[in-house]
Length: 183
Image (cartoon, rainbow, N blue to C red; front, side, top):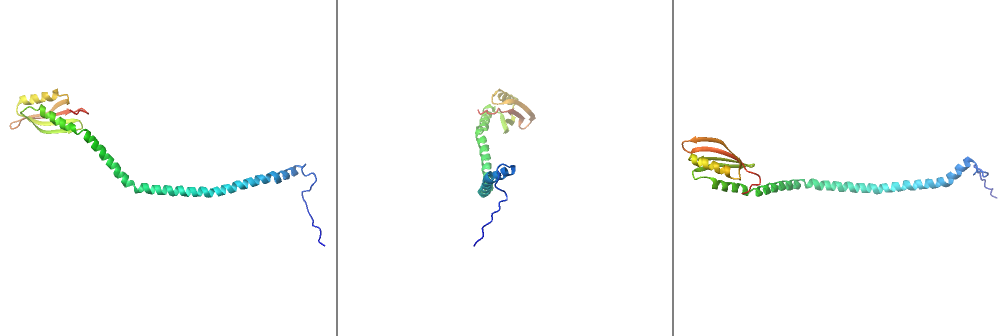
């Protein structure tokens, strides 16, 4: 015949809910369980989401690395495009101001008296420099007054003048060409 099983209850059954210790034990066994289960679920969710976040981090790192490699591979191409753009800008500026020197040369041809000859004509940054020689003082005076009368030149000044036996009067004139002056 089997022996009766013995049960030992250390907490006791009488008036357990009415003592402070009993209330704490009762609360811990009911609500404490729910708190522990909720905490464990949150820990598991955080642990599982870590795998997802690690995967996203790895994917983003690989994507950034690939894009950096593409940018580094295209650096020389971008440099050549920027150089080409700079050349195009320079060409555009030159084409806009292309007619200006031709117009100035044509104007000089109309202003020259018959006995005055141009040695050099320089146009640089809105500054016109003319080296010329005149056979007579009348031609020299006529050319100087023609230059001062034209509206296409400003600040006309005579900077160097010499009289030579073979060429006549050799002189140099500088003048400002207003920006945007085309004709």
